[in-house]
Image 1 (cartoon, rainbow, N blue to C red):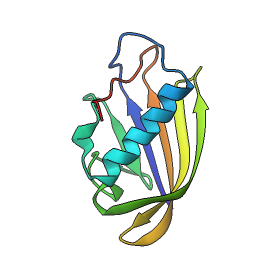
Image 2 (tube, rainbow, N blue to C red):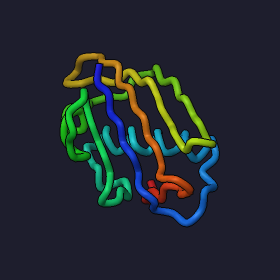
Image 3 (tube, rainbow, N blue to C red):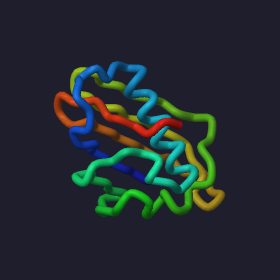
Length: 116
């Protein structure tokens, strides 16, 4: 099982990230991982990314080996705390793996993601 934690710094100017916004943030993050392209996300300089307790840069670890997002995904969205989490079954070098993802936007700010 892989665990990634990511804090997105204050990128936007509003706190309007509702449930749909948080859900879309997870979707876009997974899409960027699947294409091995962290540049698809507008991440600030103060992003914290860990995988299995080890601090990595976005683009390292599972970012390099994830080959598929399988059908299981359970999202946990907390608008008040600006936190989006998900349990997702992915393929890591062709082998199924449970991926636990937690994204948190910085206080009072919405993430600004690049267009898909």
